[in-house]
Image (cartoon, rainbow, N blue to C red; front, top):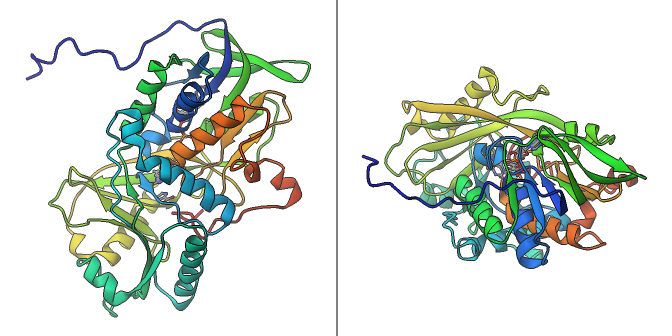
Length: 404
Ligand code: FAD
Ligand code: PYC
């Protein structure tokens, strides 16, 4: 069957590391690759390497459920995620790679009067920031999502929902591959199977990284390692307010199109969309313990599926095909850290927790700008580590897709 699949071109080179880079990115997930791409493309810094301990896009980028939206409550985060959403809207063209961004709408269901009040507040805050947001009642919801149980006979009856119609889903692997190919084309070295094991410092500044393949010197180092960020910070002699938790997802056998949007409920605690292939893509909350194993516990799977069947009783007989986990790095205020550190020339971009896929283009763009200049990008400034000392936290627990 594959006999005619010959002479395929490599998507990117497999280069030998140079002795010195202007910028070295630790972590070849979507955020790291996007950072490298924008450094080369927009900020003219082409002597860049991405160092990845495994394969490109094999971390949370490959493990997430691909929900993209920008309906965050507070100005700081709404602006950052909206910056990302605008980049999503032109990303396939920009990368010349189909990332299958599908703006099919994201619904956040309300099951109580307080949910409805919170929904009104968030949608209003979104609109004040120029972000689309609506609140609809259960009658309209039932018309828009016919198989959703909007009856009064459920344990937690649905009263209404927010909807961000520009939200949706994308193809996660394609995002990593598209950025990787474009970064490589712009001259970035993508160094796979290269694990950072330490940071070399001189006079309080980082001067490069120790890896399983030897030392690589760099003028600036940006760490974008998601669930492993706390560990890397420790190697650099820094403590970050991060906890690493498993977050699971699962997909069903493929079925005919039945769910045309993304539906999330923080009350019954589950969310669902349907991939173009027909699989139902399902998830819920983090596993509560800390850990680095990329799997989770059965209790969480059972809880998740209870929630999905509560929302869509019609799915009760659908069989699940696969389940997996990623390791998410959560912060006390459910917001990322995009920051310089006490070590000169060492930057961290982490703490995206359960919700960083949607931010991939925006995170990469603002991080690249910050690494290229002396000042952090204005959209990144509120997310500095200093907020945990000053108390200027940005509490986005309410807008986080999954509770943690
Ligand atoms: P990653 O893709 O994890 O990349 C980090 C990379 O760093 C990895 O490839 C890792 O191998 C590498 N690395 C680590 N340590 C080292 C080292 N020492 N040396 C070299 N390389 C190293 N977000 C959403 O917005 N929407 C969703 O629907 C959503 N669903 C999710 C569902 C699940 C099950 C999970 C686990 C996460 C979900 N997320 C979602 C969160 C999202 O996946 C992440 O926030 C985002 O993908 C983080 O991207 P990243 O590039 O920073 O991390
Ligand atoms: O942040 O929207 C989100 C999300 C959904 C599922 C996991 N994270």
